[in-house]
Image (cartoon, rainbow, N blue to C red; front, side, top):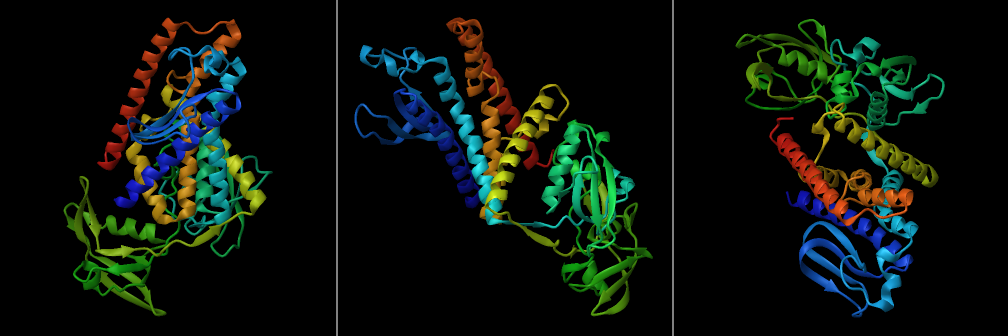
Length: 456
C-alpha cells in the first residue's frame, strides 16, 4: 500500500512539474513575467522566491495539479513599465507557444521515458501462445497452443519482428482500431515449421477495445506448461498423490497441451452440484503414471466449477527486450506518436458511442498501476510513466475550456476573425468546460471503483 501511494505521488509530481515547467520556460523565453510557479492548489506548504521581483515557486497542500501565473491585465493592475511583459500584450504566436508548451513538454517527456525503458531493457513474456479459446477468431485462423509468433504484417509484404507478447498485443490492438487484417508468421516453440496465419480483426467492433480484447480475439495468457505447482497438503490434488513439478499429459483421454487447457478441464469436471472423478496421465521423473482424482466443487460467481487446490502451470518463457541508443530513441518517438493517436481515437469513439466509456480511468487505477509497475522494476515504471504522460499531454490538447486546448481554440478564433473571444462568451464557455470536466472526472472515478469491486 505504501509503495502504491508513493509511486502515485511520484507519478503526479513528475508529470505536473514537467507540464508546468513547459509553460514556465517558454513564457520566460518569450519575455513574459511569471509571478508564480505552483505545484498543487490551496494552502502554501513551501515557498521560495529569490527577490521580490522574481518568480515565486510554491508547493501547495493539494498536489492534484498545478499552474503558472503570469503577469496579465485581465487578472490585475499591471504597472505601465511592465506592460510589455504582460501575457495578454504578447503577439498571438507567442501566446500560442506558451499555452502549447505544457502538453508538448509531456509528450517530449514520454519520448525520453520510453527511450530510457528501451535502453534499460524489460523482461517480457515471449510471444508464445497458449491454447486459443474454443471457436474463437484465433482458433478459426489456425493458431495452436505453443505457436511462437515471430513477425507481423498488415499487407503480407512488409514484415516487422514481434519481440514479445506485449508487442503482439499492441499490434493486435492497432489492427482492431483500424478494422484491419493482420498476418502473423509463426513457428513451433523450437522455431521450426514456419507458416503464416491471417487474423481478420475487422470482424471485431473497435468499441470492444478494452482490457478483455485479447479474450475476444481468443488469445489469453502466454503459453504455460501443464505442470503442477504448489500443492495444498489437505486438498484433492495432494490426496490423489500429485506433486509439485508433475507434468500432466492427458485427462480422461483428452491431451493436455498447456496450463490453460488443464484449467479448463478441471473447471468443467462438474455435473450439477457434483464433481466428477477424473483419470489423469502424468509424467514424473521420466516415468508415466496414472492417477484418479476427485475435484471439489467451488463457486465462481453463480457458476459451479471444479477445483483441485493446487497451483496450475509453469512460468512463461521470458525474453529481455532491449534496444540500442538510436533504435531505442526512434522506437520511443514512434510509440509516443502511436499512443497519442490511439488515445485520440479512443476518446473520439467514446464521444460518438463507438467505444465503451469503461475505458476512461481515474486516479485509483493510475495509483494501482503505478504501484504494480514499481514492483516490477525501473523499466516497467518508466514505461508506465510515459503512458500517463502521453495521456496527460493529449488530454490537455482537447478543445475544452479550462484545458490548454481550449485556450488554443480561442487563439484560433482570434487568428481567423482578427478579434479575441468576448468576455461574455469566455464566461459561458468556462462554465461549460467545468461541467464537462466534472462529468469526465466523475465517470473516471466511478470506473475506478467499479473495477476495484469487480463490476467491470
